[in-house]
Length: 412
Ligand code: HEM
Image 1 (tube, protein in one colour):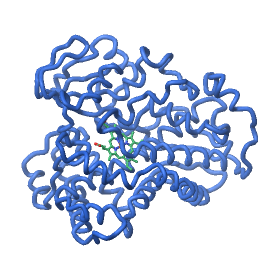
Image 2: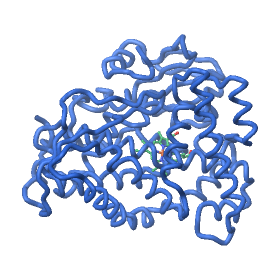
Image 3: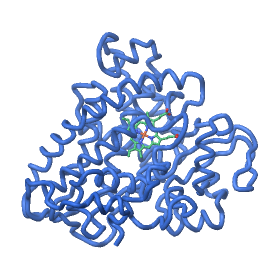
Image 4: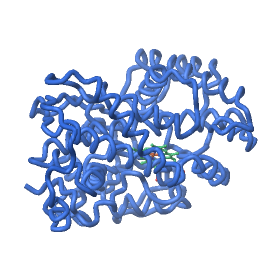
């Protein structure tokens, strides 16, 4: 099995035959059953998050020196912080992501979607990744964090390079190439944070106002400005593919509750954050397998969402399943994703608005798309579609609610 490109059959085989299994190549323990993954995430005392942002391919000395010269560091702040400073930093960031602030972004997300749909060349093919999914989540994240004057294209280049540097199966030459944009991103963050107004209404100012050391603030923002938008781009691409593959589901996305239910089902079955890491703080036993202290665990979030002990007929795309939101795509417990509400809203609005405008849109090819294959991030890299005719009227197919409650949407 290729850990960077696992197939559903690989994950099934792991769950059934080796639910807690040490991978010789990476030295990590693969944990694939839902109950085990959830138990690990729920227990921050025995399972620490310190290795969450450690480079998967060890970074060689010369590349480390490029990063060090730029002052690059990722001290424990949020996802990689098992210490007592986590709660305050989490509280600070969550002030920008309250349910009210997130809900208020709905009309703006619809507006950004409409602008991008307006630019599509009607009657032609389009790739919805660059056309719609690529920059929209970055713009939304920057706005919700109050961060202005950002070159969004530069941010995307920095963040895609950073994802590959930290989660890719990369050669030393490639690491060298990737270290430059990663370092440039960190330096840009450091200078913006140093220049921020502690009285300001933005995240940088809030970090200064709270007296967070510059090094910690830069590390926190580095993670947040990557995790808070690349993952949503990936979710959008996965969602377009999943929904468009279900017979007759696409034009029904404008019915109440359907787009949101589809998003949950994508998160369960094709989660963009496909794995996440922890480290054992003491000797533990999981699924009757003893693991010593200090061992890295790779939690197979993707496999956990297809565990038949929790989700009946897990391979089936079934937006009406009653327990779809039980998935672990956003983690669980103390480090549960702070942006879950925003990511859900973005995906729901973008899907619905696109389907409203182009109810006849279809995938250009039935074949599998090229996939992003990083250890913890897995999603289609393109969404080639034929647009079909454009419509402005919504709600042409009444009665879907009836299908949702009867549990039949998408089950064909
Ligand atoms: C589809 C989109 C997303 C997915 C699948 C996702 C997934 C995750 C996962 C698996 C974790 C680790 C949870 C754990 O350790 O238990 C996490 C943490 C986090 N996510 Fe997300 N995320 C997404 C979008 C976002 C967005 C939009 C933001 C910000 C606006 C965000 C901010 C964070 C933060 C700050 C943490 C660390 C929380 C902590 O350690 O206290 N994420 N996310």
